[in-house]
Amino acid sequence: MNKTVKFILAANLLALTVLMFVFPHLMVSPGKLIPGHKQLESDCFACHLAWRGSAAERCIVCHAPKDIGRVTTTGQVIVRAKTVVPFHQELTQDDCTACHTDHAGTKRYQWQGRFDHALLKAAARDRCATCHQAPRDNLHRQIEGSCGKCHGQDKWTPATFDHDQYFVLDRDHNARCVTCHPRNDYSRYTCYGCHEHSLGKIRREHLEEGIDNFDDCVECHRSGDEHDIRGRGGRRNRDHDD
Figure 1 (cartoon, rainbow, N blue to C red):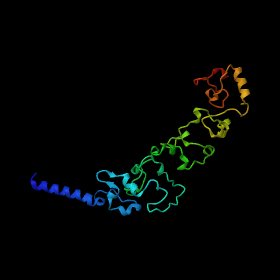
Figure 2 (cartoon, rainbow, N blue to C red):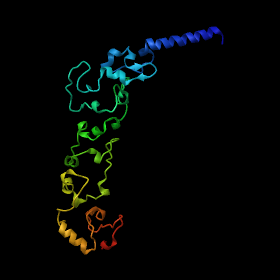
Figure 3 (cartoon, one colour):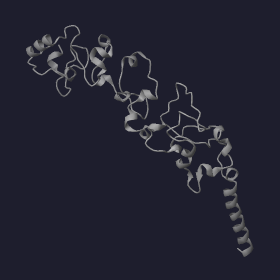
Figure 4 (spheres, one colour):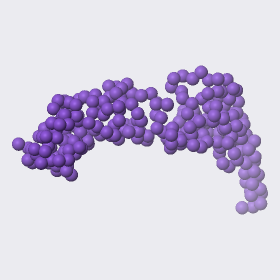
């Protein structure tokens, strides 16, 4: 390769490099910006650092985390809709591009993926109702407290809690949650108060069978079937299968 060819290639490479810095929105831009950033269309370095891409420190120059969802970048108070919640104040770090992108072509300003709840402060992760509207089905209307008792934060369904693993809610036990879990405390339950389930009667019947420890009903009774009685360790008690 002669010197002339090398010079031409070097000149072209230099020209492309200069053009990338002078007109980056024409040379390397992956797509149009969202309408709110339209005035920055030709000023890539308002958001990007050379060779490092977009940086959160550039974003928060205009979008102060304490103001996001509350006031606009011009200081006007946001009259927010019921579905818009200012939760950015609960984030553990300023990492805007973890969720947002401007250059999305026809998919503008989309979430980069499922929101990672690990970005939230620990206390905020337990306040699901702050951002999410509670389901209004018959089951959830009865329940109060943290959604995390049954649901994970990676996905809503399926719920991580399977009631049948503890007690099968058959047709005779299709009761309201508070019937067995007073005060919406799902870490505890009681079987007393329904039909013949009084403490005195249950005590007498179990002592007649030689059972003196019956505080944990579901250890032996996993459903409302009176013949489905299991011994400790989950083994079926054949003495009660007649």
